[in-house]
Amino acid sequence: MLYREAGQFKTTYAEDMAIFPIRQDRIALGILLGIAFIGVPLLATFHVWPFAGDYLLWAILLPFLILALAAIGVNILVGYCGQISLGSGAFMAVGAYSAYKSGTGVHIPLAWLGFAISIPPLPVLASILLGGLTAAVVGILFGVPSLRIKGLYLAVATLAAQFFFDWVFLRVPWFTNYAPSGSVNAPALNFFGLVIGTPIERYLLCLTFVTVFAVLAKNLVRGNLGRQWMAIRDMDIAAELIGIRPLYAKLTAFAVSSFIVGVAGALWAFVYLGSWEPLAFSIDRSLQLLFMVIIGGLGSIMGSFVGAAFILILPIMLNLIPTELGVPLSTETITHLEFIIFGSLICYLLIKEPHGFARLISIGKEKLRLWPFPY
Amino acid sequence: MRMPDKSEFLLQVEGVSLTFGGVTALRDVSFDIRKGEIRAIIGPNGAGKTSMLNVINGFYHPNRGAITFKGRTRARMQSFEASRGGIARTFQNVALFKGMSALDNIMAGRTLKMRRGLLWQMLRYGPALAEEIEHRNRVEEIIDFLEIEAIRKVPVARLPYGLQKRVELGRALAMEPDLLLLDEPMAGMNLEEKEDMSRFIIDVSNHYGTTIALIEHDMAVVMDLAHRVVVLDHGVKIADGTPDEVKQNQGVIDAYLGVAH
Image (tube, each protein chain N blue to C red):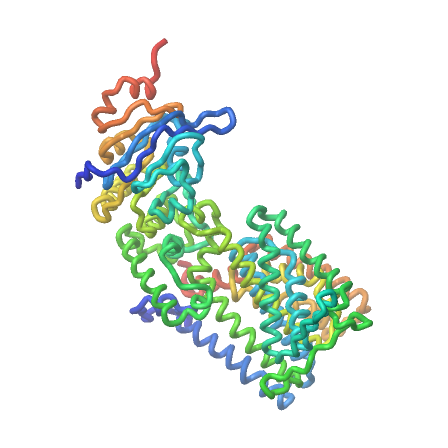
């Protein structure tokens, strides 16, 4: 009964084109942002349940935020532009390693020319954004095949990016600053004199990044460029005949998507992991991101968040529930059960609602608007 | 109905031939379209009508012949030249963007007119927002014109066929074309929907002054709407003239009804 838009008249197109045209949605979003930006840090500062330890912040909220950001990036490419990519992990790695290189100083010895290029370490924020930019350039390069091939074949081409960068960061010691173990440490997180260290600070940093990027991405997908991406996805021939250039539309999708994924990769490395090796960005990560997007909802920014939450939290829940219920299960059994339940849930969900949680939510909203009447 | 300006040609097709491997789709076809007229292309199935439209808007490239559009002669049109030059079209099987709302579909037709770059659109502030609203205004005019206000936010995949055809016409109109190519705009419609669509076509011609080339199988509609008709059969032009002239042409009657052997 509360979810009614009756009486909310829109008198300008700007109001009609708002992200949340219904007042109740705006209030809900405001409350959610309030909880995220003020409530959670307050609770965590005073160690109120469920923030008694750092577990919830470190192990759930931080990875959730960063992977949701990466999922937004993947969703732009796969969900909005319809170009299947299995190389998201590689683009995260490119973001992470180029942020690492620019954060620790780039030194390119050009011995045969008799000099070397040295760039001093950049500030952290600049490194992270530069990581995103590098990923965008690499994304454009690996997006070029999309002009000729589609669907599964394109997925295979992006898979090449995945294996190539796995190899590069493992085998080329220059990228890891010649670390003997192949594992590298992030530079101190110094944002204009503000050093980010505690979990709450890290959480707020990531939350800010995710909020800003989510708004920018949403603006893009509901604007002219977003319509071009979706047109290419839905019917590329008709799109071309109304004047959309496939080259521009596809490559911008690759660039924007890889930029966001690259920034997420840099955050994952710098803020969440702290020290990492190439394994952190393996093919598993690419698949995980793809599942998030498919389960959350292709072509939905909000779906990216829901998908990330589902993929991250479900295994933890499946792990916790038997323990809480006091069912004595061995760790091995729990791990196996987790895989079984997780897999079957995904299958069930995709059969019941192939458009993911985002579609379920919008159907729910439509029903709620009429409730308690069926139509 | 407003009579077209007889002096000026918007498009001239001269000696166009198109083959796919061993199949000849068009053989030495020449005709012209005058500014402001409604030109029908008719013919039995497989006559090469759709191929002709595809040649005009650059989707197919003819093997021989020349196309003169707005005074510029080309051996072949490129699809981006056609869309930038002001040729819009609808498709025989509706080719809408299924995942988008009717409004977004029509807005997509304004792509070429929108100038703000990626960074502005990302911020969606100031000039970018003003541009979006300006084009929304234009699109709403088209929505009003086609009487589809009630369905503007509905995903097109959910719409009935007749409305999808109308949205597709709206998307073509959003391009503000000089030449509008309609490929069977009334295929699969009932009488009432055909009447509606005919009215829209006449209104487009009168209100916007758009030159229209249409393919249609319903002879009553063609004879009522078109100023001039070109008839194709097996890729060859067999008649060209006003509806009355074409109706009396023995070749056309033979092509449609068959010849006794």
